[in-house]
Length: 227
Image (cartoon, rainbow, N blue to C red):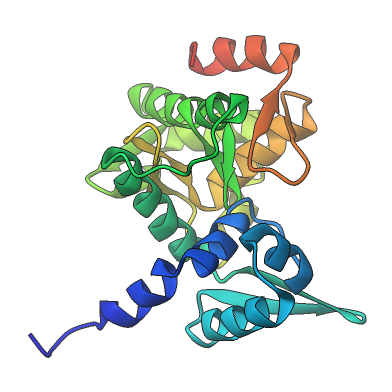
């Protein structure tokens, strides 16, 4: 079929191992330099620069300049959602990286997916909010209900401010390890931010892993049930 979107170009860009490593390194929402991404991808800096140019041209990543430094980030949440779905597909087919260890279990428990909470705890939060009528789920469409808005405001989130942002207020993102949805969008980002501000969770530097504190374990269970 010669009509419709051309997925082959995007697929070939993501399919290169070095570029896949670069993209997954950006999945925690950080902006990283070309040198940092080259090290993470295991390639020389000139090679990484070529990959970054291709990814930028395809609008999968976007560059940012701060003073003399240039950084790269994922272009948007749509790119992150595609990567998360591909991770789930690879996991389901038994295609895993050779390196394994304790971090695997931590990644499954709680991690950052672009800018929101993923893993078992992210899925638990989403399912709890749907079950309590705070979120309304219709296939892949997710909306914040009136009681949900009241709940979010009580959690210290400026719902009116989020509604004015360009990002969707709520969206579902298929979790690669749990194969169920977790909460993305502006609300998902704000929920994770509040948990960090309240000392429930701490990001592990240089990783997607989120460490849950003792306070956070209890508070999360009280609010959303045990993960």
